[in-house]
Length: 268
Image (cartoon, rainbow, N blue to C red; front, top):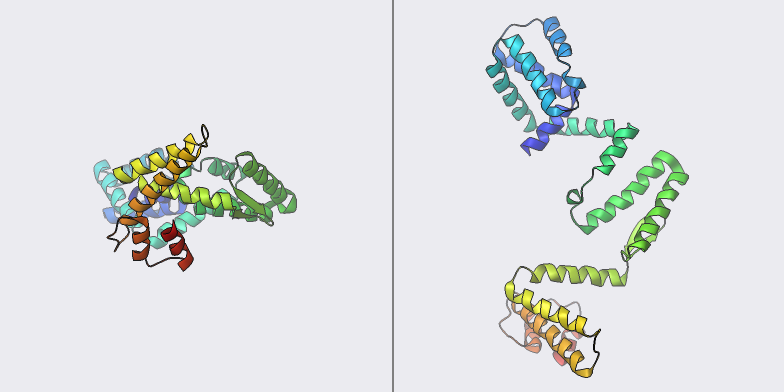
């Protein structure tokens, strides 16, 4: 939290000035308000885009006023550290930074283009991000802008076969193929954490791919057997399961969506 919070505080001109004033106060050196005001303005800190340069400018200015560069640097670091631990200060700085970006077309576009995939955690978060963008565009530009976004998003989904349906006003609804695709991704993630499960998963996937070459009864039976092997291995990691065959495992698992699902596995 510390580094990210300090970036937010250093980016905020108001809190940067407050940090400057608090550092001067902590130093114990008597400095006239007018002198401090002139020195701060002359440092040009608030006009520097690079945060390292902004901090260096403040440190240099404080060092000159206090008469001890090392002490000024140390006190400023302490002031910033104290501020990062204050949730109210962080929230105020973050809100001002957000408002500054929203009210500036160039900054808004730059911020949007800089969004990294790692900042959007999971598919649900991405869906909410895409849906909420519609509301913002509708507020800013009305129907012409929001409809343009809706149409572009629809084309994007169709082009890359994302297995979502886009409905008005701007709601992304998963399709049945999309649900199964998501389930399969989750299954891969689970099995990849265990060498034995990973091997069984790869065997099953390879058997499915082999069906493209030959859909004979023998290959289909092999695929079913590989799937059963995988299901039995997955069932054995379930808490409370001590059996090894699919039918016996299904009897020991209690949380079924419906009893017929359990009976279907027992019959299989």
